[in-house]
Image (cartoon, rainbow, N blue to C red; front, side, top):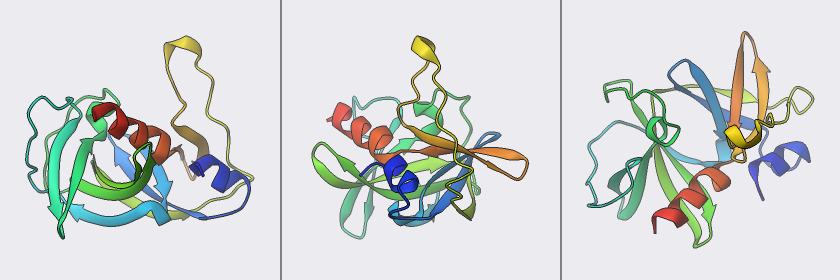
Length: 160
């Protein structure tokens, strides 16, 4: 089930973990989050895509690590004490997998208000938003809800 269906139908998680990339706030289903850890260097894999930083050994599992800034073609930032790796469970064409995403920092856990949820905008041919489940106004900012399966599951399949 995609993140958007879980939120729209009222089934499944009702909370999101929000995180920062630059000045923007993004969110993923809290039940997808397996672990939040501070930045640590990864083992680079030769000839991997630019956004695929490498892999980490997490308790015996080899987990690919993707830099969301690079994936979204944002201005690069250095990795520092505030940089975080969020380990998520995603459904990919190869089955359920864990993947780590590098973000600037974790914000908070928020409750999903299905009535406040807005659909992703149609930007036409100039940009794809198929991985955006929706937008949700929270206080003075807009949270971009990511569909982890569409964004990362497809990315893992493309990198294989």
